[in-house]
Image: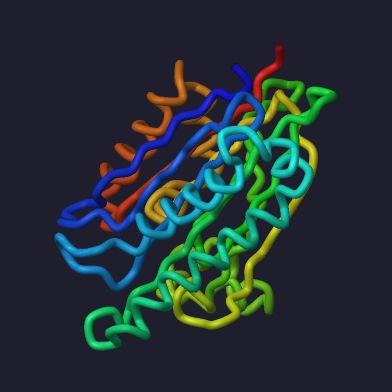
Length: 263
């Protein structure tokens, strides 16, 4: 099996509607799609923008994959395809706002989506697209056995602008309300800023996608330890959620863990 993965989403502390969503799907044995989405502006028992966004991306990749007929095309053009898939989400969610501004005026979402691919030489590659304050992390152990975690995405928030201008510290970032003020969530702008990245993947690395209900509640070094110390990715995802809730963090949470396997 080329990929080892798991995903989990849960209500936040004393929350009634889960607006976070996870979507993980493997296409053949060489392509894996992972999406975490955090919806805004929805109501209980109504359409959820996060779910709409994740499924839209999954359906887009599935149509292009065409039961394997275009597998090589996706592998060779993953970075372009994933960005266009995210742009299609922006059009779909924006259409709800245009159709009924009264009901869907706050409809939007953050998301991070990743295509993991394996080429003919059995090398792994990663291509991601990102909007908002969901995140992608890389986690591994050092030669000394210590947990190392690196954030690969950059939050698109008012707080991030303050941090980059040295007006706040990294510790203050997690305390101020501006951390939840998104600059250009999907569905709110005709041309949102979509951050992208494309590169090779080492099989000793673990990738973690999270919504802010995880990474605003739990410090990165603790996240890394919880994942590396768990016996399975299923247990690790559930542990992250339980930890956020035990801290009484009242935002919904979602996480996906992926590792590319050696033969």
